[in-house]
Each structure stands twice: as structure tokens, then as C-alpha cells.
Image 1 (cartoon, protein in one colour):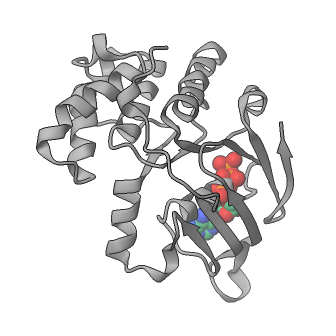
Image 2 (cartoon, rainbow, N blue to C red):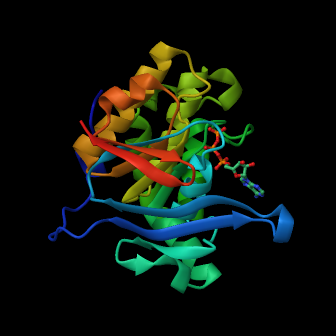
Length: 242
Ligand SMILES: Nc1ncnc2c1ncn2[C@@H]1O[C@H](COP(=O)(O)OP(=O)(O)OP(=O)(O)O)[C@@H](O)[C@H]1O
């Protein structure tokens, strides 16, 4: 894979965690119908790591990812991202942090069907507030990074599942976020295509200095990541450094 030097994030001094999660609890519903999914999650993640979050179905992986992405608010506890406590921000400021400094990837790709790969990436940058003058180059760099520049004018229905997921990755990284959050990024792909997606994600960490956190059931993922965290009964029960 051709790494694009321009995608590299500025390296910062300091050893503070990029993401610090403390006593995170999330309860859905009220009274007798209440379900506490996260019971007090603590996590500290340094910049420049590839992280897998595993756990059986229903263990709370997506719930945790949504809290890290500031798409949801905890019932108790806090998420500190890049030095800011997300729960202390207004809704608007939280949305800004997510759009400008995070990238999100979903298992269903979630691309706009009538837009080409390039237009999908360019549109996301517009939403992220990237000035018009820089959008074309940044979109092309991101599509080049995932190996899709030759197909960037194709629309999603003209692309394979792997190409659609690579478009979704390009869209998530074009504004150079510090943190990329991916919910089961290989779930809808065959194993060979899944491995290709993993090598793209690995490249983002190694060559661009991003931090990637992904939920997964895929054993192949555990082998290539830097750390694996396991959710069980609402807490982290295992944190392995490979
Ligand atoms: N908005 C909600 N309202 C009520 N319950 C919810 C809500 N969101 C999630 N849950 C419940 O929280 C639990 C954890 O769900 P979550 O999607 O986080 O699990 P998961 O580990 O990602 O599962 P999977 O691997 O199947 O995707 C489930 O029992 C789910 O039904």
C-alpha cells in the first residue's frame, strides 16, 4: 500500500493518554425496565495504537464506541478525549469535536449511493469544516492512501464490498482525525478482503500516526492489533498487550 506522507499527523510532545475513560456507566430505560450495559469501564489509550474491543454479542461494545464517539452520553463517569471531558461540552461543541477530530466507520459503510467515492469523501470534509481550497487534494490523498484513486469516480453500486469499505475509510480519514472509531469494520467482508481492510487500518496507525479503535468478533483482527480489551458483564475483564 502506498502511504501518503501528507496524511501524517503532526507529532505532539507529551505522554498523556489520547483517550481516558473513567468509571463509565450506561443504563438504558428506567425503573423495572432499566438495563445497565456498562457497569464502570476504565480505559486509557495512548496515541498511535491499533486497539480491538471484543466481547460476546450484547456485551456493550457498540454502546461503548458510541460513548467514545460522543454520539451518546454516559449515565455516570466520563470520557476525556484529547484533553477535553466530552460530557462537560455543549451538544454543539461535542458535535464539533466528533466531526473535526474523530473519524467514524460503520459496518454497513453508510455511503451516499448517488455520490461517487470522491464526492462521498469531499462531502464529509465539507461537514467537518475543511475549507474548500484544501478539500480536493485531501480527498485525493485519502483515496490514494486506501488504494482507490483509480476508481474514485465510481459510485458505491459499481464497487465491491471491500472497495466500499475503503471509501468509507477514506471518508473517515480525509480531514486527518486523531482518532478513528470503527464498529466491526470487517463484518460484512470475506476474510481476504477483511485482511486488506486491516492492513489499511494498520497503515493509518503506522504511517499517519492515527489511533484506531474497533469493535470486532474477528479472530484475525486480534492478531494484528497492539492491544485487545474485552467487555464482559459491563466491565473490561481483559486487556492484553501483544
Ligand atoms: N438505545 C438502547 N435502548 C435500550 N437498550 C439498548 C440500547 N442500545 C443498546 N441496548 C442494549 O445494550 C446491550 C448492549 O448492546 P450493544 O449493541 O452495545 O452490544 P454489542 O456488544 O455491540 O453487541 P453486538 O456484538 O451484537 O453488536 C444490548 O442488550 C442492547 O439490547
